[in-house]
Length: 132
Length: 79
View 1 (cartoon, rainbow over the protein chains, first blue to last red):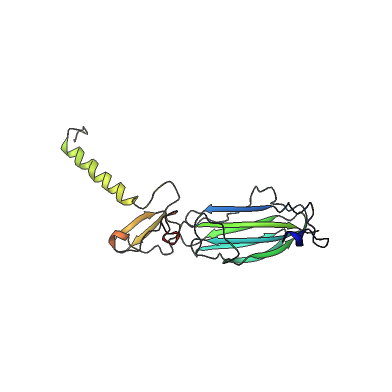
View 2 (cartoon, each protein chain N blue to C red):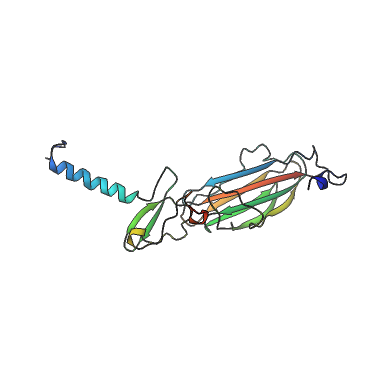
């Protein structure tokens, strides 16, 4: 992995040690709408072209999410994968990642709704890898 | 008029009833995490703050409903 990143063809802008990532764990109230865990993150506005990987998992099946990157809608309103454990960051072993490219200056935005009247916890992680 | 003094049996009885009411309503609400309301055919409305509840129309565990899984006490974590 390190060898691949440090090769001449895939050198990250700013060096291999800069892969900003943002794990989060958000508790929802019943029927809470429009939650964006990325609000206030230093890299909420991606400063350079980047490859973005996003994983999210909910403790219930009663949550819906929409993913935006700048003016693009990466994923329309769809259910968040359930079966998560509160406080445990999802792994790519059993959570399908959402992967996309973000342009420089794009705002990464999530809109997560709770629709089942429960109080789930959504755990997730965003990893942005600068493109050279 | 009932005098609410510790020595009055009526006031003690009333306090005990209120205490039971509060305990039964918040029995499944440990800590200060957001709660949701279940409505069961036997239990009526009761509060819960488990993050794992999928169905809200169920009774309390004491009345035959499903077990409430508490955060940090998940059975699949071996605790």
